[in-house]
Structure formats: structure tokens, C-alpha cells
Length: 80
Image (tube, rainbow, N blue to C red):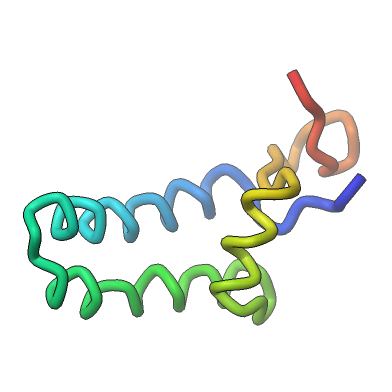
């Protein structure tokens, strides 16, 4: 099993950066959405020790990436 890359707090910060992007896309403001992607990309790179944003997206689709760092399973993700 993969060691988690980010904790829940870091994921919440990334999701907060992604929320405006989703809103801009939904409203058809694609240029503005594109211009705001940089913040989310920067957070991913910071919290994953330099992992490329696109690799993070691919990994996010195939492996669990979030953990509670204080969990009893030593920081590894556990399925519900």
C-alpha cells in the first residue's frame, strides 16, 4: 500500500484552491479558470515534495493519497 502523500488539512487547502476553478468553468469563464490553476498546482507541488501536478492527478485516480497523520496505522491510508 502506498504511503500517503498529503494529510486531510493539506487536501482541504488544495480543494479550496480548486473550488474557484470549478466555478469559473461552470460559468463558462475558461480563461479565468485557466489563470487560477497556478495556485492549486503550487500547493500540490509544495505538499507532495515536488510531485508534478499532472502526476498527482493520475495518482489521485489510482491510489489513495490522503491520510490522517495521527492515525493508528502509522500514516498509511486505510479503506473504510
